[in-house]
Image (cartoon, rainbow, N blue to C red; front, side, top):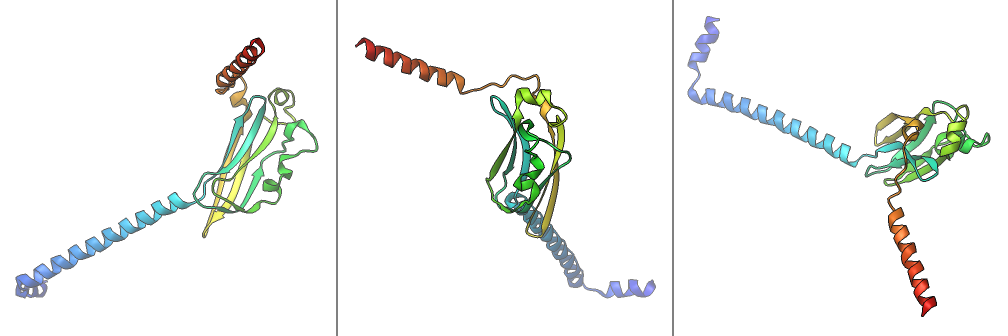
Length: 189
């Protein structure tokens, strides 16, 4: 230990400053690497495909929507459903036999959207055996070297006691009223 202390005492101020600068440089190199890694991760999240499965409803039907809201194509997209679902209550129309479920697709582009009519709102309430109220759809796809598997829980009961607000009705009624007024004026004139 005394030998080490003796050698340290022999170092000049310049040598101490060089050692400090080496330490600072190493810290900045590490910090730069962390920043670059964070930027690469952020860029990947920004540019990757995001396939989602959601339930929507129009005036009379439940619709299962599969869409890619990301900025790049999803590769080798395939969907699975955890139980049988007979769309529109038809014994012959199994959701699992649709292309995205049975075969998948090699490319699902950014912005792509596919909808499956599950059934009419009244019929779904009457046929729980062929049209289960809750099920899970699993989406498997890849981008680059990354493989993604996500589960989407679907609950048809979320709309069970809700009234669908159709926002275009007021505008459509106004257009109909105006058209009727025009016809009335033309008949009178």
